[in-house]
Image (cartoon, rainbow, N blue to C red; front, side, top):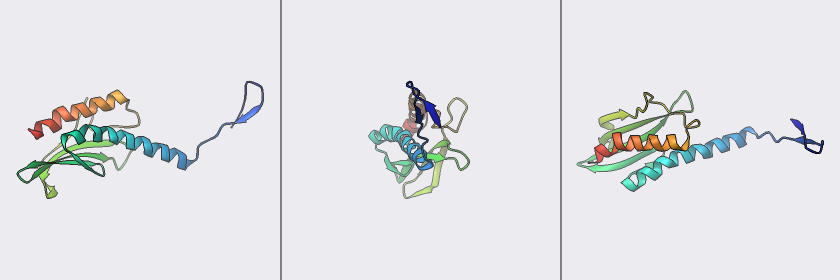
Length: 131
């Protein structure tokens, strides 16, 4: 795509390659998930992939899972209490639902919306299970 500069010369706009666009997207997605890591790590959660787990005692653990939709670039957030040795031996399961939605498009969320989601999940879904 050619444009004219203020001097009237033609200049080329650099159109990013698919690889460049995907690299930027991947980096932004990592930063989005890093918000959750920064909130959960001080509470004793350990990260593996997109799951953060903390031992609760009595052979149980609490897992916060950022589950990417198979059909879009959005996330569901799940909170599960399960046997510490078996994620699938579930005692309780909740999906984080805020403002009537249970799926979140991370690319459209502002920093404030991300922080509000994290604080909501902590207050309503995670902290009550830690006590």
